[in-house]
Length: 268
Image (cartoon, one colour):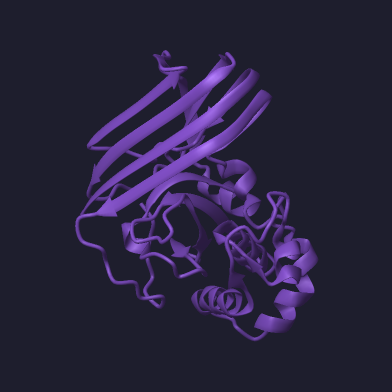
């Protein structure tokens, strides 16, 4: 399987800014290029730091005001397992059963108990949560705010991929199932954008869960992974003034797989 991805961000920097980007593919690539320009002039390569789960964060320090353009392109042949630091896996699973900023699972304990009581098998529980969220929410672009958490989404009854993912994560954690959010490139997604899915721990492996059902999971490419969207944002302004004026994402695969929601899929 060959996947080719591109991301182009156009930004207006109004005050000197410290920025971090999470747009690079996690893990090995066949080819890759990251180019930044400010008012048409090339900038030095940003500093790269470890984002965990194979992810990479690119840090641009003290970017001067001007028109900043970020161009990223990568090709990936095949699949690669995501490395885990030695001894980290068990602690990671404990952390991923706790509430987090956008996934206040403690506030959804009674909802999870009422809706999924009696389901003992973890795999069946994961499938039941996915189907429940798919049935409960309407996918409507622009319907949610960046500050909305899973409770807000449940009350609103609509959202976008990150809202679906936050609700799935919260309901699973409320049942002591470790779950994390993953930002991905998703060939087949329409309209094309960065996409958010969930990885849930079955007791023996991490399984990809996408309650939106908008793209085949077997063609997805991991970008960043964390507790929720606060850990996986494609762009973070740590200080300064920055406006995103344009964004274009492309993700294609040589042969688009058929999606089967009942299939257990691992994300590489």
